[in-house]
Amino acid sequence: MKKLFPFVITLLICIIFSCSHSRKSVIDDYSAKIDSLILTFTPREFNGVILITQNGKTKYSKEYGFSNFKEQTPIKLNDNFLIQSNSKQITAVLILK
Image (tube, rainbow, N blue to C red; front, side, top):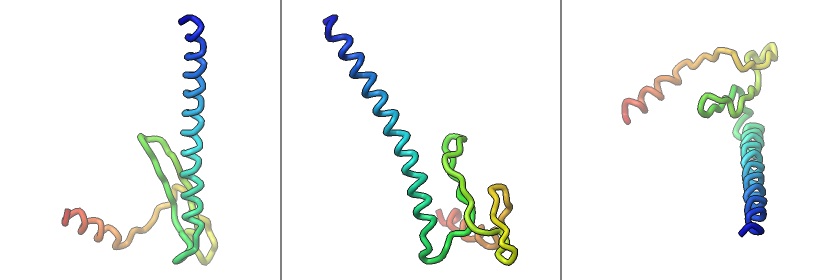
């Protein structure tokens, strides 16, 4: 039993390190997938900000495009956006639910 104990401990440490490494690569894969989706130009180029949070921690945040197309002013993460009539559709869905 004493000879088996160091082997079991070593095996557990290897499993823990391999699991923690694979979890980090999955998180990085999400960023790469989001970037590849946003950079597609079909039906048109994306213009806006994407912010993904989980449990109060920011997982992904990037801005794409311009806030003013004539002056070619890039969008910033803290810019305000005019939602115009988009809230009507959201309210209608919530009422129907």
